[in-house]
Length: 403
Image 1: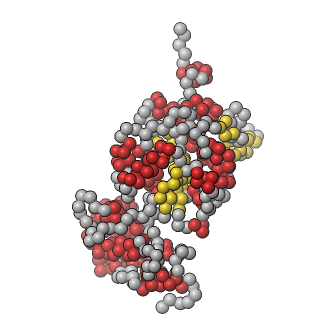
Image 2 (image 1 turned 30 degrees about the vertical axis):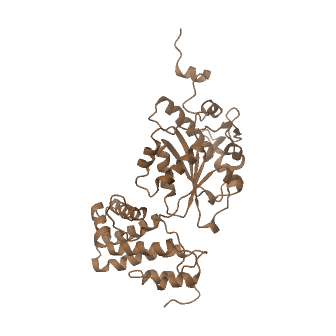
Image 3 (image 1 turned 120 degrees about the horizontal axis):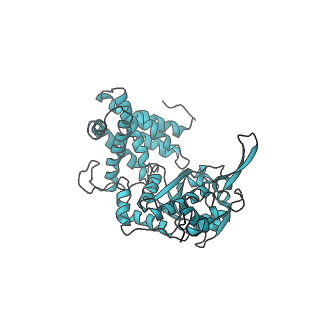
């Protein structure tokens, strides 16, 4: 029997191609393979998220949602939604195709369009340009085939849409609703592609993970019931407050999530500053956990006042994210090491860093000027100078001079 090379097997349809860009309609050949969840998935999840502030209960919820279908992580800014998405994908042994939504999006950005280019011969050519959804599905199909040949390769590629509600979702997804709303092998017609390369079937291993900001609602678009039915929604909130009597630098092996956040914020800020070459990681960590520890603790105490403000509280409610606390300490340590600031000036620098990174967050429609005034007046040292003034200016909204 004559030897048959791989190209002949691909052309005959005996095996799928390893690149589907010019064979989009053949994605259906590998579309029915389900997502592999792995017997050791919980261990994979723990390992992938060990550097993040997320409970095991939440991990299991997210993993279950992804096994079942598409996922949206919702919550305040700075709570690690994007980092969690990346870590979860890693646990499932999948790649992410990341994009950030925009209010000008249409089906052109998600499905595709045609563009005119000038060739080397000076003649115009009409070429197809795949949208983010189409591109990620093709990459997913390519990943699946590579995984068949070598299990070390990722089992799939998922589309990750950050700030999903920045776009008009119904307008952007268009006919993709028919794909997202069923488990059947429904195809979508890619009108921007050439004839014979237009029918796209989504592999069952494909997923969409989106993140939405649940705070700045005046700047984002609402999601219709149709899109909500096609995604599983899980909230990623600020960490729970520390336990009664627990200190921020508690050293037991199993501290609360609040204290873990304190430790992670210091380490991540130290890593950022050391990456700038201003000091070693050990030097920055020593500054934040020893030399300026009292100031760092006051920063966290201050964040607690507004993070967990309840109805009827004299303080405004503001879910300050972990990322914003890292930003403050990064700015603080950067200034200290870049300009060799003496220890007696540390409090001024911490106040300045908070005025730049935290005070602007209070400029929100949901916070009343009265509650801001009250909060500003009750700020403790070192935030009772520059930060206090910045918050009072926000409360005044330019209506009068702040002395």
